[in-house]
Image 1 (tube, rainbow, N blue to C red):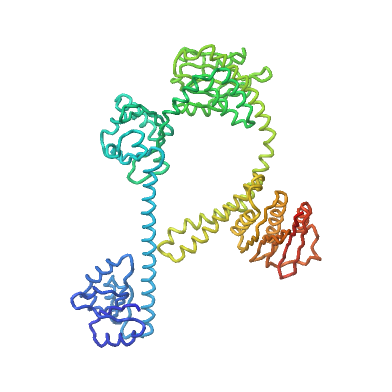
Image 2 (cartoon, rainbow, N blue to C red; image 1 turned 180 degrees about the vertical axis):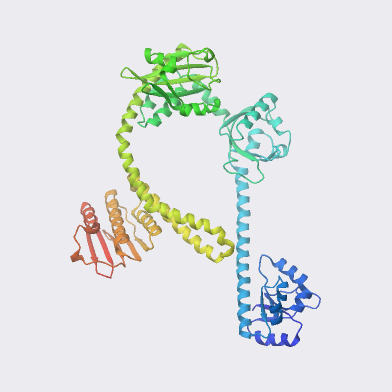
Length: 630
């Protein structure tokens, strides 16, 4: 029973209040020395008592916050007229004397309802805080025990986190590294190297991936650690920057040994195999640049193609490290402005530029860091169609042997490029038509669900405080929309990869499709799968397509509010039933080919199944397919 604290000077009014509230509430009187230091749910106070106990009441309400502790003020009509009751900001509601007992009950009920709501909200907040604390503990455990090195800097560039893998790799404990202003000197004792790497770190603005540092361990061993920064992607409070590292020392040694052991003949043979394994033009360019590094060492490389009398870069690698990203992506130059390329086209032979400071390579801007170049023509049917060009920051780096090797590689590349061009042209129209169809499907299904979900997500923070009782309902709707969008996406992926259907049973296929249907239409669809059968691909595909067609007919024509999809195995028979409570139709007045009926019958005939359709006006429709195992 709820406790009502009566803070009233008028004893007669107090007695009358006890009579009116008896049986519904417990009316308690204040302690003489500590008037509000008792457990109660609502306080009833008059103006005299409020004036006297205002500090104590304020303190008690603050102690209960964020749970509401309401007070009801009993005042006079005169106070209402002159507005003196407004001097009491601690009052949640007021009533004028004399008052109606029924109204008093109503006012108390509303105040108690607000108190209960605030208690529920506070409990949910506490639950959420506990959940977040637990997650924080779990994340700390994961970070500490993950199998890669993880460390973090604070604002003063001292380490604030050093996990167990860091301890294992370096031999330094967290106690020795965390908050140690000399930690970097321990890990990178060579001052010149340390300052150079920190300068590059500044230049990269703390952004890097697989950046290799030479770290010195406690026992003096130098290890290569590939560091990747994650701070900008996943900022963490208290960590100014952080990243993960992998000890690649053994891998680097193995790669160096493998590279030194590989012969030129093996490299060219592997290159030929790789280039002919793909017909996608972009992949061909990427693989050309990927494999050319296995043939001839260099700092940067690009593939150029000819468009009339203009050469343009289609792929580049390594220029980011040289501050030449724009050149690698967008550089175009007329042949008449570049003697070297013009000479290569004329002779169909590779060319070496030993020193760019004394170059005939005119027309190239912002290439101060590149000192030497070797370029070979890519020829097809005695016509130069492009170039492979390698750059080095070292003068006189390339040799005639490098030029001959690059030429052999370019000849193999020409075949791959030409095949990829023909393949790309052959599939361009088909790809365009497929994109158009998928765009329509995405708009009709997934995009509408995601749009609705985004609207709900934007509204939830505003409703958290003002309408907490609606949040759970909105979250349920959001969950339904997201599940439906996921189901629709998976259904579209099945359209893109039909072979994936062979990996799924018929039950999950139907359930996934139904979830997508319910997310975009206001209809309840029940799915019943009993004794799920193991079906061959042709039977499974036919039953799935029939169910799709039948449900689509329900959505387009039936105006139904409920539907069901049932799949049952009865002895040697598989029975698929799709039913709805829609408006139905007169079978005698509907052509056999209407509403996809003929399509469903054809699919049933293909697998030797029987299909029947039963419908009456106003009583819905039922489609049944019966397939018997042979």
